[in-house]
Structures are given as C-alpha cells and as structure tokens.
Amino acid sequence: GFMRAVGEDPGVATPEQRATAAYVLGAIQEALRPGHDGWMDDGLAMLRPWGFGLADIRRPVAVWHSEDDAMVAIEHGRRLVAAIPNAEPFLVDGLGHGGVCCRQEVPMFDWIVSKVPTAGRA
Image (tube, one colour):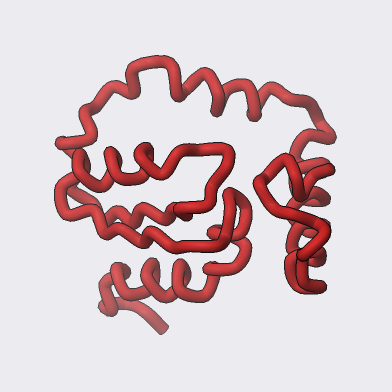
C-alpha cells in the first residue's frame, strides 16, 4: 500500500525499489512515533506566509523533482525554480515522489558539498 501511495507500482518494483520503500516507510513510522505534531506543522507551513519571498533567497538552492511524482505536481518544482534566483533544477524522470530523495542521495550530497566553502574543511 505504501508504494502505491507514493506513486510506485509494487507489481513491477525491483528489489531495490522495495527495499527503498521499506526504509522510507520505517523512517516515517519512527518520525511519527512520538506524535504527529511535526508532520502537521510541515503541512501548515505550506499554507502560511513564510516571512520572506522566494525571490529574496540568496543562498544556493537545488530543486529536485520527478516528472512521475504522483503526490506533488511537477509544476510546483518548476515554479520554485522560476521564483528562486539561481535555483538549480534537478528534474528527473521515473522516480516518483519518494524515489527522488531515496535514489538520488549521492548526487544530492555531492551538490551540497560542492556549495560548501573549502576553507576550514578537514
């Protein structure tokens, strides 16, 4: 049921996709174990003003999204890229909602590291 909820077809899922889904489901269950307040806060944050405009963001931003995301429309990712100055789009196909963060973690971390100044790094 979880795989269907995030837009993946369990009937054609690879063992890696099944393992990823099990990992993500476990992480969500652990995150919600103490209560759902944090999850609710995240949802409410999407409905309230953030106190700054997207055009005011000056830090590096990467927007990762999949054409195949059944939970959040790809247009949302495109709007963020258009609204945030110098945002770097990483719009990938075939990964669904959860697959982007669970199967692109190496390039995501590489991108983050590329943005961290080298001074003081061990």
